[in-house]
Amino acid sequence: MPNLKDIRRRIDSVQKTQQITRAMRMVAGAKLRRAQAAIESARPYAERMRTTLVEVARAQKDAAHPLLVAREQVNKVEFVLVSSDRGLCGAFNANVAKHAEPLIEERIAAGHSVSITTAGKKVRDAVRSKHGKRTADDFPQEGWVEYGQAAEIARAVSTRFEAGEVDEVVLVYSVFVSPLTQTPRDVRLLPFGGDGEAEEADGDDAALPYEIEPNPEALLKELVPRALEVEIFRALLENQAGEHAARMAAMEAATRNTEDLIDSLTLTYNRARQAAITKELVEIVSGAEAL
Image 1 (tube, rainbow, N blue to C red):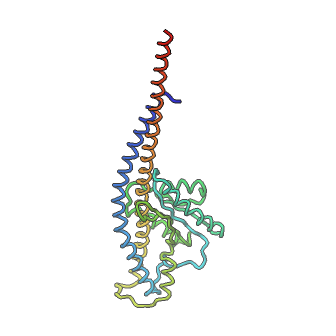
Image 2 (image 1 turned 90 degrees about the vertical axis):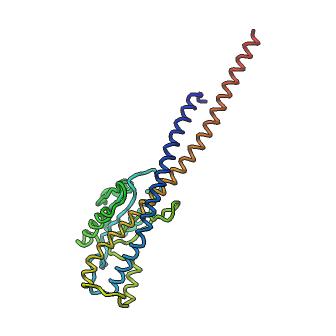
Image 3 (image 1 turned 180 degrees about the vertical axis):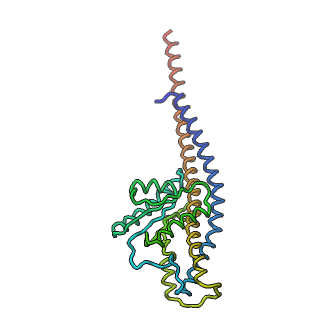
Protein backbone atom coordinates (compact mmCIF):
# COMPACT_ATOMS: atom_id res chain seq x y z
CA MET A 1 0.00 0.00 0.00
CA PRO A 2 1.38 3.47 -0.82
CA ASN A 3 2.47 5.55 2.12
CA LEU A 4 0.52 8.58 3.30
CA LYS A 5 2.87 11.04 1.65
CA ASP A 6 2.43 9.44 -1.78
CA ILE A 7 -1.36 9.42 -1.44
CA ARG A 8 -1.41 13.05 -0.30
CA ARG A 9 0.77 14.02 -3.26
CA ARG A 10 -1.59 12.20 -5.62
CA ILE A 11 -4.63 13.97 -4.16
CA ASP A 12 -2.96 17.36 -4.60
CA SER A 13 -2.10 16.50 -8.19
CA VAL A 14 -5.67 15.47 -9.02
CA GLN A 15 -7.04 18.62 -7.38
CA LYS A 16 -4.82 20.76 -9.59
CA THR A 17 -6.03 18.84 -12.63
CA GLN A 18 -9.60 19.43 -11.49
CA GLN A 19 -8.98 23.18 -11.36
CA ILE A 20 -7.70 23.07 -14.94
CA THR A 21 -10.62 21.02 -16.29
CA ARG A 22 -13.14 23.22 -14.47
CA ALA A 23 -11.57 26.37 -15.89
CA MET A 24 -11.48 24.88 -19.42
CA ARG A 25 -15.14 23.95 -19.08
CA MET A 26 -16.06 27.52 -18.16
CA VAL A 27 -14.01 28.94 -21.04
CA ALA A 28 -15.55 26.48 -23.52
CA GLY A 29 -19.02 27.39 -22.24
CA ALA A 30 -18.39 31.10 -22.79
CA LYS A 31 -17.03 30.47 -26.30
CA LEU A 32 -19.94 28.17 -27.08
CA ARG A 33 -22.48 30.91 -26.42
CA ARG A 34 -20.72 33.18 -28.91
CA ALA A 35 -20.24 30.39 -31.48
CA GLN A 36 -23.86 29.25 -31.16
CA ALA A 37 -25.11 32.78 -31.74
CA ALA A 38 -22.87 33.04 -34.84
CA ILE A 39 -24.13 29.82 -36.44
CA GLU A 40 -27.77 30.57 -35.64
CA SER A 41 -27.36 33.92 -37.39
CA ALA A 42 -25.56 32.41 -40.40
CA ARG A 43 -27.98 29.54 -41.11
CA PRO A 44 -30.91 31.61 -42.43
CA TYR A 45 -28.58 33.61 -44.69
CA ALA A 46 -26.93 30.47 -46.07
CA GLU A 47 -30.27 28.76 -46.67
CA ARG A 48 -31.75 31.80 -48.39
CA MET A 49 -28.63 32.19 -50.52
CA ARG A 50 -28.93 28.59 -51.72
CA THR A 51 -32.67 28.96 -52.35
CA THR A 52 -32.17 32.11 -54.41
CA LEU A 53 -29.43 30.45 -56.44
CA VAL A 54 -31.67 27.46 -57.20
CA GLU A 55 -34.52 29.78 -58.24
CA VAL A 56 -32.31 31.72 -60.64
CA ALA A 57 -30.74 28.58 -62.10
CA ARG A 58 -34.18 27.01 -62.55
CA ALA A 59 -35.62 29.98 -64.39
CA GLN A 60 -32.50 30.72 -66.46
CA LYS A 61 -31.27 27.35 -67.68
CA ASP A 62 -29.52 28.94 -70.62
CA ALA A 63 -27.32 31.01 -68.27
CA ALA A 64 -25.55 28.15 -66.55
CA HIS A 65 -22.47 28.88 -64.43
CA PRO A 66 -19.44 26.54 -64.66
CA LEU A 67 -19.77 25.68 -60.96
CA LEU A 68 -23.37 24.53 -61.48
CA VAL A 69 -22.72 22.16 -64.37
CA ALA A 70 -22.46 18.48 -63.45
CA ARG A 71 -19.93 16.35 -65.33
CA GLU A 72 -21.26 13.55 -67.49
CA GLN A 73 -18.73 11.17 -65.97
CA VAL A 74 -17.14 11.54 -62.54
CA ASN A 75 -13.57 10.25 -62.39
CA LYS A 76 -11.84 12.61 -59.97
CA VAL A 77 -13.31 13.43 -56.56
CA GLU A 78 -12.03 15.82 -53.93
CA PHE A 79 -13.08 15.62 -50.27
CA VAL A 80 -12.98 18.68 -48.03
CA LEU A 81 -12.84 17.55 -44.39
CA VAL A 82 -13.42 20.04 -41.57
CA SER A 83 -12.25 19.58 -37.98
CA SER A 84 -10.68 21.60 -35.18
CA ASP A 85 -7.01 22.35 -34.65
CA ARG A 86 -7.10 21.50 -30.95
CA GLY A 87 -8.03 18.38 -29.04
CA LEU A 88 -9.53 17.79 -25.59
CA CYS A 89 -13.01 17.66 -27.11
CA GLY A 90 -13.81 13.96 -26.87
CA ALA A 91 -14.53 12.06 -30.07
CA PHE A 92 -15.59 15.21 -31.96
CA ASN A 93 -12.72 15.20 -34.47
CA ALA A 94 -12.49 11.43 -34.68
CA ASN A 95 -16.15 11.22 -35.68
CA VAL A 96 -15.52 13.40 -38.75
CA ALA A 97 -12.65 11.18 -39.90
CA LYS A 98 -14.71 8.07 -39.10
CA HIS A 99 -17.64 9.39 -41.16
CA ALA A 100 -15.43 10.32 -44.10
CA GLU A 101 -13.42 7.10 -44.25
CA PRO A 102 -16.11 4.81 -45.78
CA LEU A 103 -17.00 7.56 -48.29
CA ILE A 104 -13.37 7.79 -49.39
CA GLU A 105 -12.95 4.02 -49.55
CA GLU A 106 -16.14 3.71 -51.59
CA ARG A 107 -14.85 6.15 -54.22
CA ILE A 108 -11.46 4.46 -54.31
CA ALA A 109 -13.13 1.07 -54.77
CA ALA A 110 -15.16 2.55 -57.64
CA GLY A 111 -11.92 3.48 -59.40
CA HIS A 112 -12.15 7.21 -58.83
CA SER A 113 -9.08 9.35 -58.34
CA VAL A 114 -9.44 10.79 -54.83
CA SER A 115 -7.78 13.88 -53.35
CA ILE A 116 -8.35 15.22 -49.84
CA THR A 117 -8.29 18.81 -48.62
CA THR A 118 -8.37 19.35 -44.86
CA ALA A 119 -9.47 22.33 -42.79
CA GLY A 120 -8.17 21.55 -39.31
CA LYS A 121 -5.03 19.94 -37.92
CA LYS A 122 -6.75 16.99 -36.25
CA VAL A 123 -8.39 15.60 -39.36
CA ARG A 124 -5.22 16.40 -41.33
CA ASP A 125 -3.20 14.16 -39.01
CA ALA A 126 -5.81 11.40 -39.24
CA VAL A 127 -5.89 11.56 -43.05
CA ARG A 128 -2.11 11.60 -43.44
CA SER A 129 -1.79 8.39 -41.47
CA LYS A 130 -4.05 6.53 -43.94
CA HIS A 131 -4.09 8.56 -47.17
CA GLY A 132 -0.88 10.55 -47.10
CA LYS A 133 -0.39 10.45 -50.87
CA ARG A 134 -3.92 11.67 -51.53
CA THR A 135 -3.77 14.89 -49.50
CA ALA A 136 -4.03 18.17 -51.42
CA ASP A 137 -4.36 21.46 -49.52
CA ASP A 138 -4.41 22.08 -45.80
CA PHE A 139 -6.14 25.06 -44.17
CA PRO A 140 -5.49 25.32 -40.41
CA GLN A 141 -8.41 26.72 -38.42
CA GLU A 142 -6.45 28.79 -35.93
CA GLY A 143 -8.37 31.31 -33.86
CA TRP A 144 -11.95 32.42 -34.42
CA VAL A 145 -13.51 31.53 -37.77
CA GLU A 146 -13.41 34.37 -40.27
CA TYR A 147 -15.15 34.66 -43.63
CA GLY A 148 -11.78 35.02 -45.35
CA GLN A 149 -10.90 31.46 -44.36
CA ALA A 150 -13.99 30.14 -46.14
CA ALA A 151 -13.29 32.32 -49.19
CA GLU A 152 -9.75 30.92 -49.42
CA ILE A 153 -10.99 27.33 -49.37
CA ALA A 154 -13.72 28.15 -51.90
CA ARG A 155 -11.24 29.71 -54.31
CA ALA A 156 -8.96 26.67 -54.13
CA VAL A 157 -11.64 24.04 -54.80
CA SER A 158 -13.53 26.09 -57.41
CA THR A 159 -10.33 26.76 -59.35
CA ARG A 160 -9.56 23.04 -59.54
CA PHE A 161 -13.17 22.24 -60.49
CA GLU A 162 -13.30 24.79 -63.29
CA ALA A 163 -9.88 23.65 -64.58
CA GLY A 164 -11.14 20.08 -64.79
CA GLU A 165 -8.72 18.78 -62.15
CA VAL A 166 -11.68 17.40 -60.17
CA ASP A 167 -15.16 16.41 -61.29
CA GLU A 168 -16.89 16.53 -57.91
CA VAL A 169 -16.21 18.03 -54.49
CA VAL A 170 -17.70 16.59 -51.28
CA LEU A 171 -17.75 18.55 -48.02
CA VAL A 172 -17.65 16.66 -44.69
CA TYR A 173 -18.17 18.47 -41.39
CA SER A 174 -20.02 18.26 -38.06
CA VAL A 175 -23.43 19.87 -37.73
CA PHE A 176 -24.10 21.58 -34.40
CA VAL A 177 -27.46 20.19 -33.26
CA SER A 178 -27.31 21.02 -29.55
CA PRO A 179 -24.65 21.45 -26.85
CA LEU A 180 -24.82 17.67 -26.37
CA THR A 181 -25.14 16.56 -29.99
CA GLN A 182 -22.88 17.13 -33.01
CA THR A 183 -23.62 15.02 -36.08
CA PRO A 184 -21.13 14.41 -38.94
CA ARG A 185 -22.58 15.27 -42.34
CA ASP A 186 -21.47 15.06 -45.97
CA VAL A 187 -22.84 17.23 -48.79
CA ARG A 188 -21.94 17.63 -52.45
CA LEU A 189 -20.23 21.00 -52.65
CA LEU A 190 -19.46 21.07 -56.39
CA PRO A 191 -21.20 21.12 -58.75
CA PHE A 192 -23.07 23.47 -56.43
CA GLY A 193 -26.60 22.44 -55.46
CA GLY A 194 -27.86 19.12 -54.10
CA ASP A 195 -29.39 16.33 -56.17
CA GLY A 196 -32.85 17.12 -54.86
CA GLU A 197 -32.49 20.72 -55.92
CA ALA A 198 -31.38 19.67 -59.40
CA GLU A 199 -34.47 17.48 -59.79
CA GLU A 200 -36.64 20.36 -58.62
CA ALA A 201 -34.98 22.62 -61.17
CA ASP A 202 -35.73 20.18 -63.97
CA GLY A 203 -39.34 19.78 -62.97
CA ASP A 204 -40.35 23.40 -62.40
CA ASP A 205 -40.28 26.07 -65.10
CA ALA A 206 -42.16 28.71 -63.14
CA ALA A 207 -41.06 32.28 -63.71
CA LEU A 208 -39.22 34.16 -61.01
CA PRO A 209 -41.27 36.46 -58.77
CA TYR A 210 -38.73 39.19 -59.46
CA GLU A 211 -36.71 40.62 -62.34
CA ILE A 212 -32.96 40.22 -62.76
CA GLU A 213 -30.80 43.18 -63.66
CA PRO A 214 -28.64 43.63 -65.61
CA ASN A 215 -28.94 39.96 -66.73
CA PRO A 216 -28.91 36.37 -65.36
CA GLU A 217 -25.32 35.78 -66.48
CA ALA A 218 -24.03 38.71 -64.42
CA LEU A 219 -26.06 37.65 -61.39
CA LEU A 220 -24.88 34.04 -61.50
CA LYS A 221 -21.29 35.20 -61.95
CA GLU A 222 -21.52 37.04 -58.64
CA LEU A 223 -23.96 34.78 -56.81
CA VAL A 224 -22.49 31.32 -57.37
CA PRO A 225 -18.96 31.96 -56.00
CA ARG A 226 -20.46 33.86 -53.07
CA ALA A 227 -22.91 31.03 -52.34
CA LEU A 228 -20.03 28.55 -52.37
CA GLU A 229 -18.12 30.69 -49.87
CA VAL A 230 -21.18 31.00 -47.64
CA GLU A 231 -21.72 27.23 -47.69
CA ILE A 232 -18.14 26.62 -46.56
CA PHE A 233 -18.35 29.45 -44.02
CA ARG A 234 -21.44 27.82 -42.55
CA ALA A 235 -19.59 24.50 -42.28
CA LEU A 236 -16.72 26.20 -40.44
CA LEU A 237 -19.14 27.89 -38.04
CA GLU A 238 -20.98 24.61 -37.44
CA ASN A 239 -17.65 22.96 -36.72
CA GLN A 240 -16.60 25.79 -34.38
CA ALA A 241 -19.79 25.61 -32.31
CA GLY A 242 -19.59 21.82 -32.17
CA GLU A 243 -15.97 21.92 -31.06
CA HIS A 244 -16.69 24.18 -28.09
CA ALA A 245 -19.77 22.17 -27.14
CA ALA A 246 -17.83 18.90 -27.28
CA ARG A 247 -14.96 20.39 -25.27
CA MET A 248 -17.35 21.71 -22.63
CA ALA A 249 -18.95 18.27 -22.30
CA ALA A 250 -15.55 16.54 -22.21
CA MET A 251 -14.21 18.88 -19.53
CA GLU A 252 -17.38 18.49 -17.49
CA ALA A 253 -16.99 14.71 -17.62
CA ALA A 254 -13.30 15.05 -16.72
CA THR A 255 -14.19 17.25 -13.73
CA ARG A 256 -16.66 14.65 -12.49
CA ASN A 257 -14.04 11.95 -12.89
CA THR A 258 -11.54 13.95 -10.83
CA GLU A 259 -14.14 14.38 -8.10
CA ASP A 260 -14.70 10.61 -8.00
CA LEU A 261 -10.95 10.00 -7.99
CA ILE A 262 -10.39 12.50 -5.17
CA ASP A 263 -13.12 10.82 -3.10
CA SER A 264 -11.54 7.41 -3.70
CA LEU A 265 -8.03 8.66 -2.86
CA THR A 266 -9.30 10.44 0.25
CA LEU A 267 -10.93 7.22 1.44
CA THR A 268 -7.69 5.33 0.80
CA TYR A 269 -5.73 8.05 2.63
CA ASN A 270 -8.02 7.90 5.68
CA ARG A 271 -7.83 4.10 5.78
CA ALA A 272 -4.04 4.16 5.54
CA ARG A 273 -3.86 6.87 8.22
CA GLN A 274 -6.16 4.89 10.48
CA ALA A 275 -4.08 1.75 9.91
CA ALA A 276 -0.90 3.66 10.74
CA ILE A 277 -2.42 5.03 13.96
CA THR A 278 -3.69 1.58 14.95
CA LYS A 279 -0.25 0.11 14.31
CA GLU A 280 1.40 2.74 16.50
CA LEU A 281 -1.09 2.11 19.32
CA VAL A 282 -0.46 -1.63 19.09
CA GLU A 283 3.29 -1.02 19.29
CA ILE A 284 2.84 1.25 22.33
CA VAL A 285 0.59 -1.28 24.12
CA SER A 286 2.96 -4.14 23.29
CA GLY A 287 5.91 -2.13 24.61
CA ALA A 288 4.06 -1.28 27.83
CA GLU A 289 3.15 -4.92 28.41
CA ALA A 290 6.77 -5.94 27.84
CA LEU A 291 7.84 -3.62 30.65
